[in-house]
Image 1 (cartoon, helix red, strand yellow):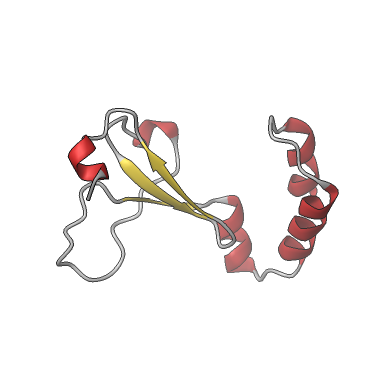
Image 2 (cartoon, rainbow, N blue to C red):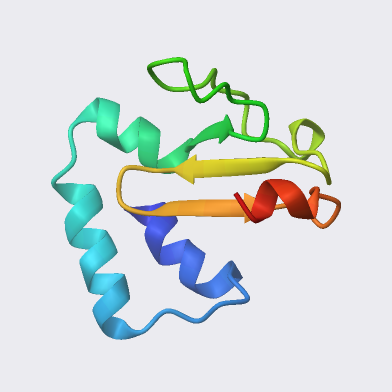
Length: 96
């Protein structure tokens, strides 16, 4: 929970009091595996996924070295789901 409080002061995106209270409540009620997922989110590259395959794509480590400019990624932390679309992604892929 300390990290949630620190996030407010180190983040360029200000959190409202309600958002901060929600995050503190959510983190304090999580079990260990959910807490690990919250602080170390899962990153899935979806730019090279075969649509006929079932299941989730392979997970990569959530570091800047693993993210390519021509890639599309899903970032999931148990509460939020973000999609990152790189600047060099093929426009045909985005229009699908």
